[in-house]
Image 1 (cartoon, rainbow, N blue to C red):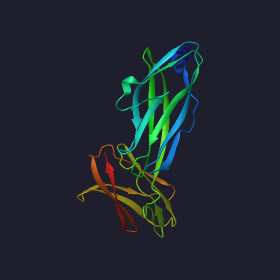
Image 2: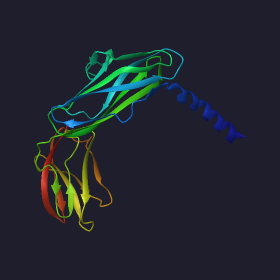
Image 3: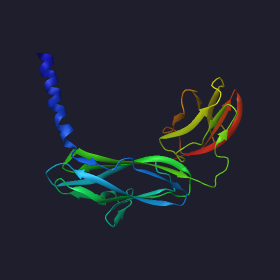
Image 4: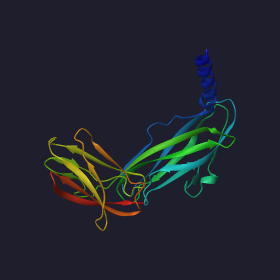
Length: 236
């Protein structure tokens, strides 16, 4: 009996949380893919599922946006820089309204990189009533040469996003699963920072750089105890 009452109490506590989220993001797979120097505008669609008027404020922007990339959030013809104008971004939705006058503008900048970002909107009258718009981006450089390494035992790309502030990733693919490969990370003056062994069963190395001081770092691909190539990435 006590277990039953405990379960009921938990369900009652959880129920309001599940009902508070009353806006749905109908736009799926928001992705910006383009080359250095491009810009792109995407339309977003959200729906107020409630029978009441709703107002939402932009609470914060989270994610990795490179120093040369820029993103703007537009409501109709009015565009905002979410880093500078966060207090000005407000959405007013009518009951059961499907809102289509919302846009994202992305400037690809001058640096090849990849990353993601999220806009978090919150109802000022109820902070559990919120919704998130998330997007990913991939900036390519069609003129780049030699950014990927094609070793006889392993193929490996470059660190992204670059610059990084929370995590840095590195894609790779083994050609010889018996080879031993690792990534050694050093400070710009050569002090060891970290070392990661590459697993032949995986395709991506994820490095946590949040605890590193801002600056330039060097990473070296080592195959069977031989240094193959050294590149640099930036931590913000």
